[in-house]
Image 1 (cartoon, helix red, strand yellow):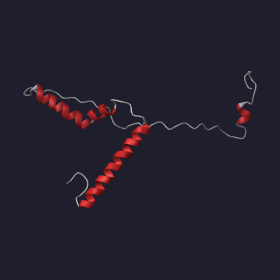
Image 2 (tube, rainbow, N blue to C red; image 1 turned 90 degrees about the vertical axis):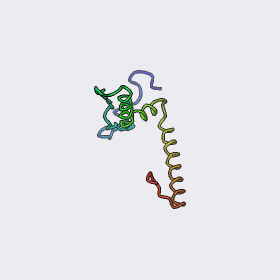
Image 3 (tube, helix red, strand yellow; image 1 turned 120 degrees about the horizontal axis):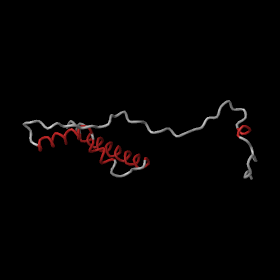
Image 4 (cartoon, helix red, strand yellow; image 1 turned 30 degrees about the vertical axis):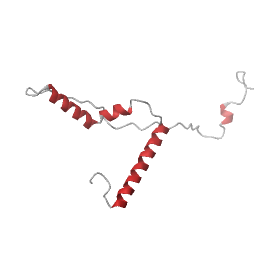
Length: 110
């Protein structure tokens, strides 16, 4: 037992022969290069508030804020995220195969 101070093998004896000690850490997730979304809509003099609100909503959609809010509603673990992504890709592949079998072009241009 190594419960006493100074008892047991020292670190220098464990790592003898190594020029340096390498500690393996898990890589941090990549930082998104996306800038923070700041949506600003100025209400013009000849514009109603409803039109300005509609413009604001459109800008938020363009920035992807609604999708981001939907994603952050509930925490999804990385394993679940991989599982959902795998299922989504499988559905997409099946749909593309089905459309190709029917002779229709795949993708958005139908």
